[in-house]
Length: 74
Image 1: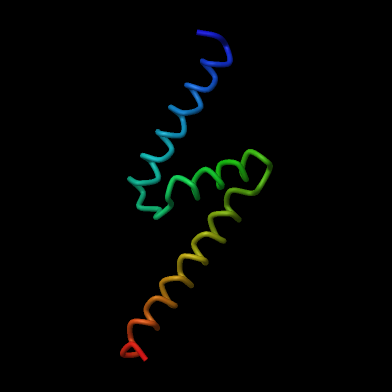
Image 2: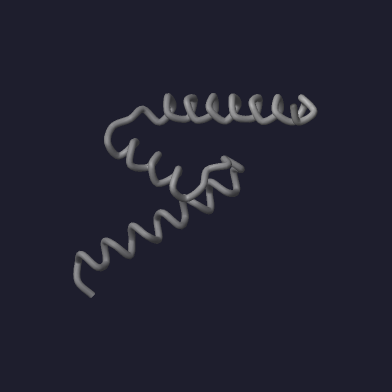
């Protein structure tokens, strides 16, 4: 196996582990969103700030979903 192929395999395995940890922690992140978060962190984004943004977006989504269900469908 070439060095490049090993790197790709290692990256895939690492991402699978990250996805499992994400599921165990009930983050609610799908594979695409988790991949975007990883890329942002690799590009220098502050992980704590990113976590706060995601948490806030999830909270807003829950509130909006709750409002839609409580209006009797009108």
